[in-house]
Length: 97
Image 1 (tube, one colour):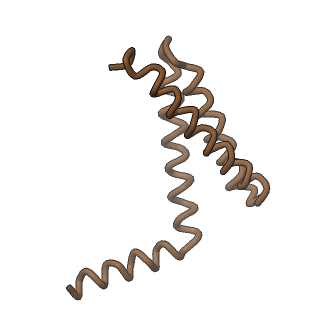
Image 2: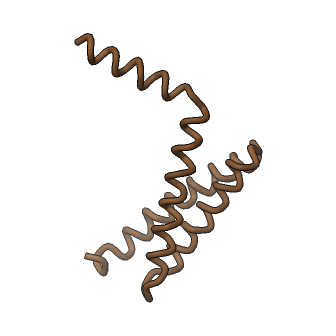
């Protein structure tokens, strides 16, 4: 049990360090950009992948500029992208599987 509480304390300490979280976010955004670029090489469904690419690039700009208004705009774009992904999945799930 002591090891478990120590692990939780380390996770909480890491979670409170803004620089580490920002670094992780940038790494995840680069992975998202790479996946969008690789996926958009195909002939099908390139529009949704390019939208993901644009939103990820916008997020990198928002993070690097440390602008709150860009961050809020990214949050709205991310929510819209999530809704778009869900609609896209519902509409094309029979064709994908």
